Length: 268
Image 1 (spheres, one colour):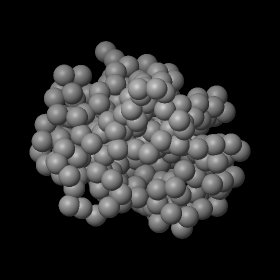
Image 2 (spheres, one colour):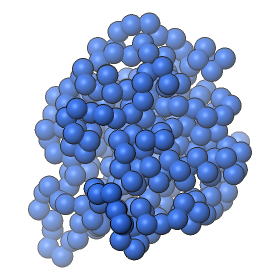
Image 3 (cartoon, one colour):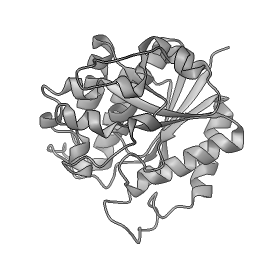
């Protein structure tokens, strides 16, 4: 029986930035990945010219579809919420920030139940960098995982690694100080992409050209090689599928050096 993983993100491009390698690896190992994006990208500011008659929503959804295909997602679901913007509220009607966790959770739960998901990937309690939409994704993902008795995997980052590495796109959203993510000791494991998977992840990020400029892509691949997760619940098919590429989070450095151990040992 094929195992299914529901991967929940806030905005088009988050799927590639935070979990692109993991999604590609899960798909390559035969798991069915259902990507759920909570907002439609319609509030973004384009970095590139739009086509005649094209809206930013149209462009970002097209970019999302391309990235999802590159990463091997079997199904893409876009929820009917608007981006809440980069402010502290109040949030406009129809935005993810204004939506109730119960309402968003009901939609996500319906997808998870219909797909027979065994695990839910979402964000850490900070939403990685504090954006309200990311925090909402954490709340919703945690609730759905708890309600359905599924293992949750909270995508996060190790800020020390990002600060030591090439310029990361999070600096665009969170600021150059990169007050983001969690300390390494709080992270269950990191995934280290090999060159082939990293190349695919970079292609998926580049697909989001309306949002991610070349200054965050050219010569910066090493800064995206690792992805970090906090597991809530029992180890399962996700752990097994990622084991060959998993390392202990405290051992990760920008150069990839240090003590490593396989995910099987982390999960034991």
